[in-house]
Image 1 (tube, helix red, strand yellow):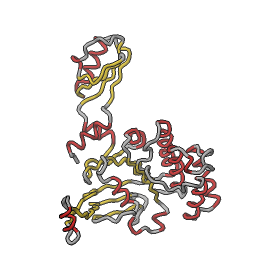
Image 2 (cartoon, rainbow, N blue to C red; image 1 turned 90 degrees about the vertical axis):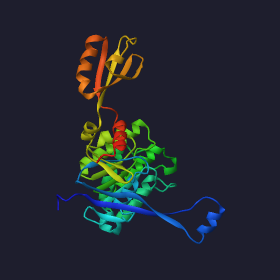
Image 3 (cartoon, rainbow, N blue to C red; image 1 turned 90 degrees about the horizontal axis):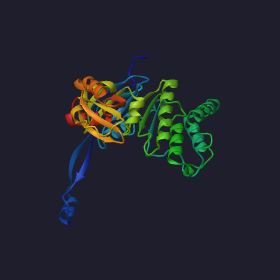
Image 4 (cartoon, rainbow, N blue to C red; image 1 turned 135 degrees about the horizontal axis):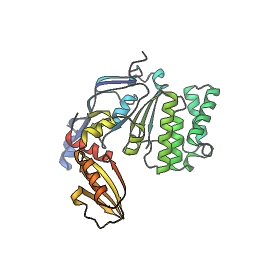
Length: 327
């Protein structure tokens, strides 16, 4: 059905059973005959839907359960419990019809063959997915234009920089035009220019194909640029599911005022909490309700060259969500 969610998860769980023992030789000998085991919940009963065509940020600290969730959604792991459907399929069954419609890009993993040109790995993917030659050539041309791949395709992958390789990795993952794209840290380790290019490409791919994208990233610029909605997970539990703008409104109690002055020797403490002041630029933190009044006072009292009001950095907002453990 066209209105069905692209992803539907209900009380999704993944529990690992791990062995543990006390340190020391005696404990090591005991463990040969009797091992103590304990259950470690990596994903602890999360529920959410993703609508077709959404780009959704999936956020949380290391060890929160993000990558485990992506692996369950892409069929690499079998859930311990709950219900899960992706594009109408049970992912862990790894049906061909399912695999042809999804892709998983992990910033720290390679799918390109290291010693041959990227173009040859593209050809391998064409054969695996049985992409008609005419469609394949048209799509490679399109991806080459969007990602500026022309000079890279004939180089052995080992000779590419990290940013160049990441562009080729993403292109290879999208050759079969997947309708569900899972991205795990796609811009990790890239310079600012390359990060912007990758973000622009993801947005354009979503616009052109209507693909659903679930993005995990520790770089909040990825999230702010691409995602209107975010899911926040911590200790395997879903803490927040909603619009990014709503997250900022709900979990912030102050605004940030950046003011550039012609005279830096002014005492700014009467106007708010001074976060920093250097080279004529001061950053103040003020309560939301006081923002308009403080701004008016600053403009009236001081030699202001420029002034901007902004929400706190997204990293601060998310830390507050973790601290409150709110749902």
